[in-house]
Length: 436
Ligand SMILES: *[C@@H]1O[C@H](CO)[C@@H](O)[C@H](O)[C@H]1NC(C)=O
Image (cartoon, rainbow, N blue to C red):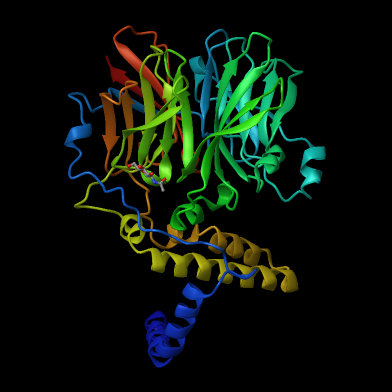
């Protein structure tokens, strides 16, 4: 009753002051960006959803078995070391973890990459959160720290790992504005022992806590950067990307595949002609990490909830309403600022939490749990974009919020074994077994 009354009062209030609210709304949309209004210009997303999922299906879409294993928080990217049978992943808490595949419900906390000195350099305002991971052929581990840069770790399985920041994100200042969000990396080994690192540079405005804001504001300044650790040379390989997310080398090493998340598109870049071509577009979900499958010739790609033109999500409707998105992003940011000021006055920690949830727009996921939750898709493709194998669910939690599929050798020759990671807390590492 009380809630009902309260709601009626709220509606009454909105009705009475609708003119005022309308004027405020219009002002927020059209106001120039001053320091308390974000400088954004959202655009309509032109990439459509597919008419049906049939074109993405292969004759086998089911798995043989599914299991939740190590319950690490936010195991985004997963690498596998065949010698020690260990998986390594990075967690929401900033630590790397290892998992023995022979006992994969257990896990071991390893270490953080970002030391105190580096934390102090940014007044402890930047958060460590290891995401994209790679081993090179000599067992050196490369890790993307989205707000700090690329780290190299030697002797990762020993008590004395050697950790080094080999590509500092602050170096991007020589290209203009400094980046704040690296997502994934590729590593090319040089004769000299040095490396060429390719990085998906998502944004100069929004870091990884603001993924939702970056998408809703059509931040399309994403780039692919190349950094040579011997010479320190840094250059831009691709630009104007709407959330470039993840890369994998082509089997012949003459380029890479790239997922553009904001755009549901996959690109193929070739080094010899420096040409980027659209390999796949109008995908049924946002593609995240892309990694070689076990054969080293095909690729596994993880996609958010698959959907079609006929049953879009709230986010799809919103992507065609740029003005509404501008209003939402700016209003949520303003509300967040207000909560932050209130927190400073009262030091009630709940207010700071609310401030973050508004500014990052995560609150939307709390209100209406359908932005992308439930369902997920794993697609195996070859380097020409041909679909080899698909596993998907349009609902349910089994495949929800997948960020990476890592295939490792299975003891059974008739089966394929995949570990699935997720950026989102609440989803453990998942293990899927497929029939060959
Ligand atoms: C989105 O993807 C298409 C391919 O479908 C591409 O041509 C276009 O440039 C992309 N747009 C942005 C803003 O990145």
